[in-house]
Image 1 (spheres, one colour):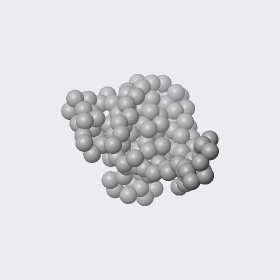
Image 2 (cartoon, rainbow, N blue to C red):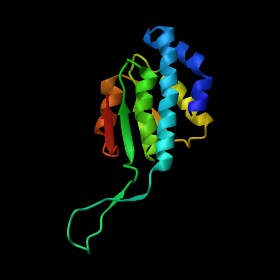
Image 3 (spheres, helix red, strand yellow):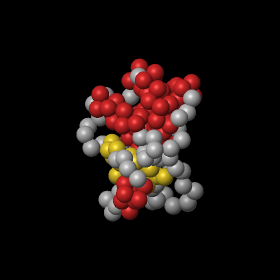
Image 4 (cartoon, helix red, strand yellow):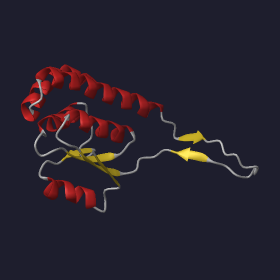
Length: 157
């Protein structure tokens, strides 16, 4: 994903500047951070072990302990208007690296670059339904995500 984000940096920066009102130079810097975020979590996801020994200071030899890392399930991700794509990357990248499916609800005032992220996900072959993006006003779009019984975790920034 980071390769496509970097390739589309100029286009994404222009869209973000137009959508959010931030200076074009700042939006371009943000795109570098967005690509870096996806790189970081892609590398981290590859390094996660399914099982990890965890030291336990108990004098019982029959006791075993391990850490099991598994996807939590569906995560709802709600992001604010400032740094639209970067805030989304900070939430989407770790969710995908952990093996979760996600529903992203960007700010109703700045959602264009997040919709472009959906196109990038399709281009890299992310299966349909793994990342879902819903736009709209908080009470109509965000509240149902936050309260839905099939959403296992909500991250709001």
